[in-house]
Image (cartoon, rainbow over all chains, first blue to last red; front, side, top):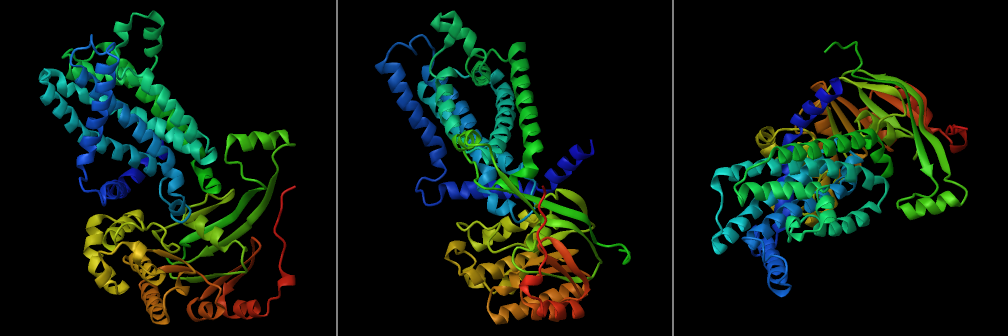
Length: 266
Length: 257
């Protein structure tokens, strides 16, 4: 109990560090780029355009049955990007700050936490892209339930944070994790129903398998709130929460058990 | 604070390092090593059973040859390492005068780095803002505030680091060979600043290879030799003995069976 309290006291003390690190990342990300922050919006917009062109026109198979395919696509895209960006950056964060951690005491979880927060800030900026797509396609937006979309987003934040903590701890000891994670994320792109709707595919095992993917649940919950105006079903509420809680427990546990050994392996 | 209670007590501290002959940083390497007759570890004690107290207001010097465990001890005191056994109790705030450039981001300007490094040390932005001019004055970098740090000379970086670390009155100041950087004028300035902090009641721990500097500044000295605490006490006699120390007299580092 006392260690948990110390954790929070420590966290409060280092909140300014967190804030400063996030603003540093932000400054460095857009330094020397002409369009600056606009890239946070342009990037997902252009990627969405490419995917829309490929899946909506060229293949002409999927996307036909999906209403407002462009909005459908960009929501999946934004949510998935947040997950991939935050976990990948968090994974490398502890090791990247080795020079600092070898010299001063800082609670080590600050770094994965900072990267996840940074990815979230980026993601929030990118939601402008979602608005632009909605305006262009004149898709109906369910305003009454749109605010509920924060629930899957926040849960996804904690889910990613847990995975990020886990990966960053493992990455200190075994560098292969980075390559494995990269490939795994590529697999996950196809398994998260970003550009198709599994309920329309009519293949039972695909539907069954995709239900095991937490990212699919987060994306679908978000769509359900913003696009379909159906709000959150009890299933969504429960699964979104449980996945986040499980991931945080696992991540914190592995991180805490190993953090004292980090310095010796950097 | 009661002057009788030590501000730092070091009790039976040992630090065991695991000098893996090869570092296995990928799974493949690890498995190859496993099949080739297992993974060998070469363990040794960087510190073995070190015990001493530091009193409030002390100016403690840490001396010893390269590899005697001075930096390891400093890192244990500042909380970077966790000792393998034993305990260190610190009763107060620590400002580590960390090595050059740690905590600095070379792509950011000096102004941005003052805030970044200040928060690394646990200060609030409001407090840093109130000390900002003082830091700039002390480091003599007024004209270079908005230049990225990568364009600085190493002496300029050191000046900035020292100014930030000593902006407040910490209870304990840890300096690891920091004073060997910068020109002699700046070194004098640093020594003056440290003397000022001392008179304000700050406890200082200084690592230096210059025995003259230790004699000039410290009232007590701990002499480490391959992880053992060889001598501990007032500066005078120990510094004298250290001068006449020969390498063949040194103790052996302890190794577990």
